[in-house]
Image 1 (cartoon, protein in one colour):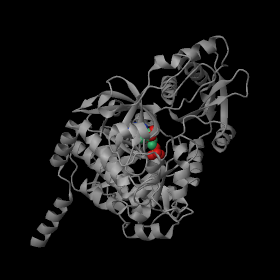
Image 2 (cartoon, helix red, strand yellow):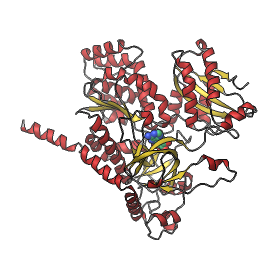
Image 3 (cartoon, helix red, strand yellow):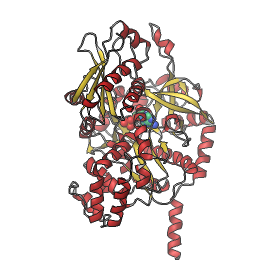
Image 4 (spheres, protein in one colour):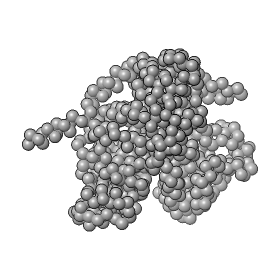
Length: 588
Ligand code: AMP
């Protein structure tokens, strides 16, 4: 009895003190300006010996003014030669004082090709800090009990760079880090699946086993998680296809022959035991659902919430996720990138559409380039000077510049954020979109956000037919004269039964780009009629598989929302899988 008590006490001690965490956050954010100066000082002191900083003539200065005067704003391209030297095995202090031993591969789904980014223990520590911060706020509102988390997390292909450094996606580097497991215990989010499943070489097999583990531990599951909402929806769409097989495995206690990886089979055999009662129960619950509405609470009766990034390009998956979630709240995750974390969601009660991120002033040094539309209209575009974290204005949009603890200085992340308010003296941001324009032919400018809004509008027409857009992307087709926008859609129905509605969707898409440049160009036919190409079922799965083959991880996958000619393989996959195309008859 005593031993049991001690074990329980030890278990308790590992869990972070939520109130203390919140207090720490409150105190850091009350003094955000000063904390920023200190954070920059610390970064520059630790990395002052790095060749990159030395060459810029900082001469040991660590104040923001000298920093901004000496260090230029850079893009990933500018840093590539340095990062490649590191990856090739040069261990001299290049970007950081201490040599970098791990490289992260960004998902590359927004840019077309994965980028190499330095990763180190300091970056890992900031990752855990942001996890702990948002957990503290989440747990205050929606406390989870002792139990497990169903986490759809995966490792990417891991490899060694030419110089022998470990390389994988940032999430993989995080999951592999020794701090990860302890950290997850601290925030009561231990994954219900064994490591062999998380680190398995085949994503499809790992997903199947995550689902199976979730069902076996169904009573214990406290929350359902994936880094991005896309993966959550994908997982439950897969469940719809394999649920009977999962039930059969549970009934017999024998793992499906679709799992061929020996390490996964061995690990799963320790968990999977014949349980006809459980199989019957799940079968009954699934059979009783109407179009899978409320699937997640049926399967996991003690789940308190569903957690993952649901903002930005993940918003289109919310409708389907809500359908599966029934009455379980959706909670949007934090904001960051392979290059480092930026802000935590400290208002978990807000619906994902309204989620904001409070910047943690001690995890990096942040600057913001104001984006004012009026400036762009002038012939000579002079980019405004970046402002500091505490100088941003509510309601304004900015491009965010990051200086992190892993060798990136004044780095343009390429994201646009909007300031929604302040938490003490640190801004609360909303993610708007990637900065690079996506759809443009002449004077028109449409971002991924504009595309998202247009697709949402047109999807309403489809909803009247009880159909959904499974996923979408776009392309600027300049092979026609004039050029025109092409929108690719995968829908969950048969094209031939919905021809009229799809033509209407096509017109609606064309009319839903509200950018003045687009509308005026369309009116004078300087841009041709928008084309809607409806894809065969499973096309986006093929695209996902393509990226996985390149070393991406499902954990970080974001469907590319615009595919250029440079991204030839993906464009080919799209083009050979078109079931039917439609041209807009609007603007006639
Ligand atoms: P990656 O480098 O592959 O990890 O992707 C990072 C990018 O994902 C960021 O630069 C953003 O564009 C996007 N992203 C990350 N977190 C969020 C979020 N909370 N909301 C919207 N987009 C996000």
